Length: 137
Image 1 (cartoon, helix red, strand yellow):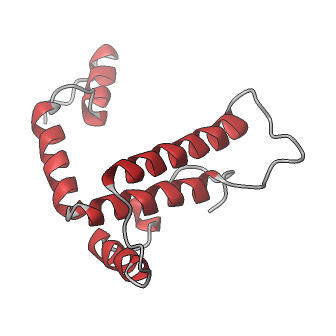
Image 2: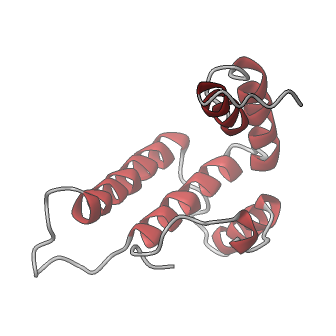
């Protein structure tokens, strides 16, 4: 995917690769080295570093600061990949199942924030009501 593509029009465009598989894949890669996973503090520093690199790419692409001709040709996609890799390393090093963590966070958002945002179907009903066409279904 290039930085110039539009957001997914549908999630059907996404590849199917479970987080658990990604965690195992990263663990297999890291497990081949004597050094293994870094300490939690080093992981946090790496995650922060990668987030900064992502911010720089976003600023170059969407912000007012174009790249210098001497700067490396990175992409938002690659920087997001780096962030994901370090995040998976961080979770693995602490024994955290990211699928379980995701499920807990989604439960939190679906309960705590259930009525926080305007839902698309509510917007349609409001627009129809404003036009005198309220759908009673």
